[in-house]
Image (cartoon, rainbow, N blue to C red; front, side, top):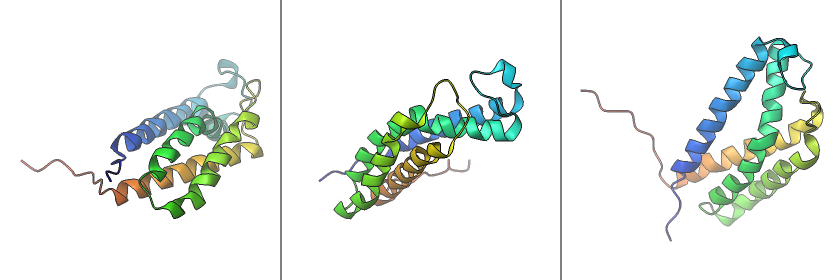
Length: 137
């Protein structure tokens, strides 16, 4: 049986991480009057908006990445994959488009995203995916 190497999935996580970092910096630096449906300023505002970004759209992507990762892992990985999918799906009730400040309920999909990332890393290690530095010249 051929297991997915998870290279593309790790790439998707890297892109998501870069976008989340950009949102954190942008929302942390700009005045709330210039931003969409947020009221918190500074680092707290940036972190809150980054958490909401982890909820939507990243939590929806995390569901698919969890399913891909669990295909390369032993059956017992469903102990973590099941909660990752359920927690990520909570995004349906966690995000209020009219108020994009983080609330406690936003922690649930963010936890699902964290579990999905951990499963992807575990699947990549199991598949033997290794990132190598460029050789010295």
